[in-house]
Image (cartoon, rainbow, N blue to C red; front, side, top):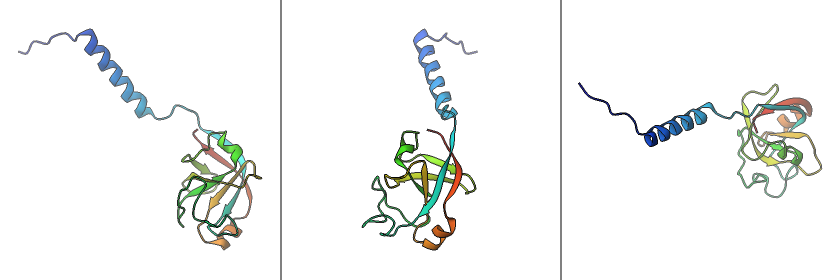
Length: 135
């Protein structure tokens, strides 16, 4: 029979710290989901809608057709919708990632990236929809 030695207080302490750290990281963000209704429109990688480098987003990310990306108005950055934030848009499937910013004149606005399909963007139009995300 193997005789067990009691754990030293130091080993016990660091073991407990490790277990707590694993539990906290496994639980994910404890921040509540946020949501709000915003104006949602669509945009394309064309110079007439962006600038002379239509596939380069505000933070220098390269946009390619098929990516689930959005541009957000600058006021939404203060709400936690910063570069890389994933969000859901009412009525659209999946999650979209913030990789771009809209023109400075817009507020409470999210533009859905639609690659080169200008007709799809026009058909999408402008809507008032609920978005949700975790800051």
